[in-house]
Image (cartoon, rainbow, N blue to C red; front, side, top):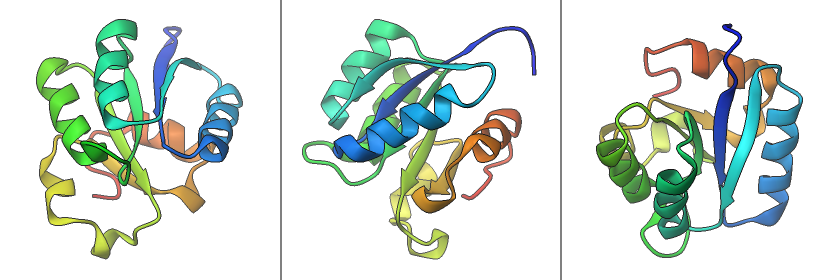
Length: 128
């Protein structure tokens, strides 16, 4: 990992998971939370405002949802990597999850510092 800090935007409609995700990011050397959002619309706005390197995106939220928000963020900010997080088993992901521009999918129960480092370091669709 380089000396550059990875700027992370956490997006989830559930406050307990946002808290948990922040804790994971804080526990991972070289990563910092630069913003939070609780909806897809807020995520799109925040991505423009805080210029994250990485977005941790819940799939199921009110409004446009995580898949459409990912599509909008990756189109507007091609250098931003989005990782989808949810409770779906990989084989049960919505069809458009694989085509929305996300770099990876991680089951929420597996999300921790080691997985965060792995999805940032790999560019091969880990989990998708």
